[in-house]
Image 1 (cartoon, helix red, strand yellow):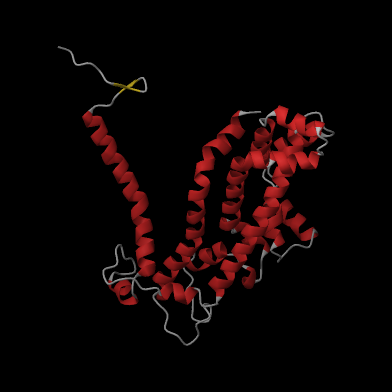
Image 2 (tube, rainbow, N blue to C red):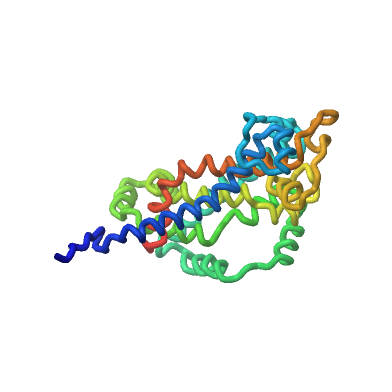
Length: 300
């Protein structure tokens, strides 16, 4: 007697062999992704003796955890200063970018308003054409922003892609709610602030995450426009001491006269500090991704 085929969601259920092969394949991919990260965490938390004995890379610490690498980089030197600079750039830049993006997206979503189509055309054109490195540098120079943190914040404060996503979400808001508020005498600003934004928390959260991650991870703008090492963000310090392999000394860490952990431990600790804040934010925003991005991309 022929065995009846089991359907899952209208599709035939894979055989046992296919499921085993998929499980092995996915496990191998997860191992390739997770093991290096585990090694970075373990190396940053291992004792100096264990790091030296393991040749600079510890997969799993066997003698407990040692926080000396983190104590060294957070003792008030270059890394601490860079961490504060990155926090300032991310907080201020994300706030400004969200305000500009949401207000511009709201203005472009009000069809029939003055200058709506020409302004929307400019936003769309900016998706296709990049100003180039030299013109961007000259603009920053002409505005007197060289060697200023504003040179890192302002040029990327409006993303055309994010504006289009926010605009599409605003267009999808219930027209009846907006019309009833207009009848009650609400101004355009009150419509935006008291109705548009509260109903668009999902897309605002996702776009805010995009901007926050972008500002936190940005280093190329800082590399071009910031000459003062005291203004370097964390990612530029990470590039200098980890990617380029420049040895970090006790004076750089604000720990002059103290014995430092191995350079590998310090580098891995810097790497962890640059990654952990974003990892902590993602779980709180994750639930908004499907609703915020997909709805904004499909509607409008």
